[in-house]
Length: 217
Image 1: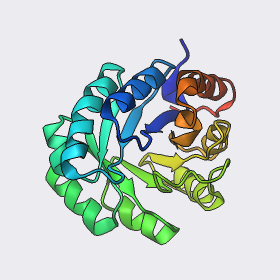
Image 2: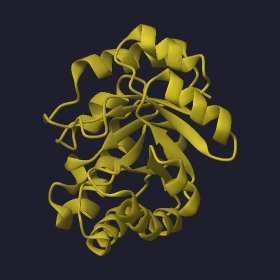
Image 3: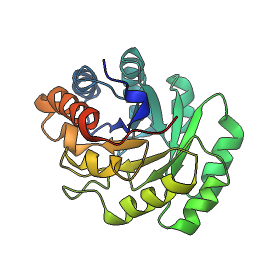
């Protein structure tokens, strides 16, 4: 078993699927593919009631696999579903409020850090992690160059971990790892062809095992 703790790890963003049972199965299969640090569950266009239903099905699946379940945005859904944390997509005000109310009981991170100034504003709030990109921002095979540049700068000077949104190509995970980021988030790269999700998770972990830089203790 490789030591995944000293290299960039995978974060999954659950794809937009209206059927909670199908979504749960696809996610469970993906998680069997290998190491996943956490899973972010966005609401997409679901009603609050439907989002609650999805969360209550998916959170136990995520936790059973040893990953942290992070609900995007909705604190009530996170509480009712017994999730591990909150992924906040708003700016510093929203994130700061969530940190004040829910840390340390829940993991609280996120950002919407579009430049260095906003990233530092977020960092001053001491979130559990900062996210570079958007959870639906994987629109090209490679990660957004701006997010890679921000991550490289951040990882070189700040101790708070960062998560960077990858691209639609699973190989994009390595480009993120090479910035020094602690985590790479993938969505369509893993779930674009749901039947292939376990194999993609396994392949990404093998790639990171082989080629990702190691963190110093």
